[in-house]
Length: 351
Ligand code: NAP
Ligand code: ZN
Ligand code: ZN
Image (cartoon, rainbow, N blue to C red; front, side, top):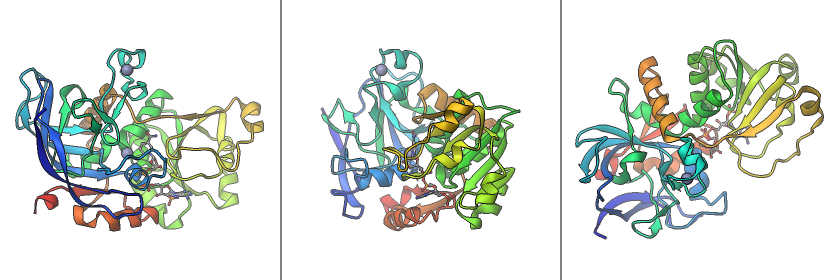
């Protein structure tokens, strides 16, 4: 198959910094859309993947799954998009289309889902490469339409940070009378606050950091609880219907279980791996409480969220950076010094 060489940023090993490299993009097939990438958000998963935190990275890796761009070419069979359209690509670029999950618009749970990076590109027989690049070619069924009224950099994080928090909020029926708590104020956490508040919920932020109290309230939280303060934690025992936990590393979930009300659910979206310390089941049994997990969201649900953001004028709070500053951004992300999502202006890759 014909390919085109494009500039990208990635790394060849877990230890090396990200650097400029070249990758191959396929020529558009009948159902493909070629996108000139304008902005790409920086997710903590990009860092986990580049540094092989999950032990599954194939190198070289080109991260990036919060992509906003303009359509530059379409295949002969494309019906949903035309050249010039403002579009987006999130964490998924393909799936089997036939399993029950795919039929139920839950492509993210398809056993054969293809990640935007680190997935398997069946056309090129290589790993997929993400949005830290000039262009991307994606099947139109995995391309999303971006409302024209929103800031183009600000909407990019909706494609992962937004949908990852929206999907559990919707699944657990968060609405006007819900009491929601969010653990961790980073990329996912700040979107969770904005979206839960927009759904009408009473929102609490759990943060380790007293320095984030004002920001948490400004983002839409009704209160901020410092998770290391036992008195503050005791004040919210038995309170929440849903907790969205965005913390990227192993941490103690037990103190949060106590803050769920009867039938409440703590949804882990951040940390992937064995818990340490282990879960104590007593409060779960005594209050029919659940601990659950959730992965991004399906294509239809992501479009629903983009439309919701367009209607309610919701975007992410972003710090726009040049691609050349990506390694510094990763170091700041590790120190939780992000306010509240880095987004790369991909013009910087063309310079
Ligand atoms: P982020 O911007 O770095 O935010 C994470 C926040 O968690 C930090 O700002 C900090 O908030 C808190 N935190 C960090 N380290 C901590 C620690 N050791 N103990 C307690 N709290 C800590 O990261 P993100 O981009 O939001 O991503 C969060 C996690 O979600 C990552 O692991 C990412 O891989 C994962 N993720 C999952 C999905 C999914 O589908 N399930 C999708 C996207 C991302 P405070 O300073 O307020 O405490
Ligand atoms: Zn992500
Ligand atoms: Zn499937």
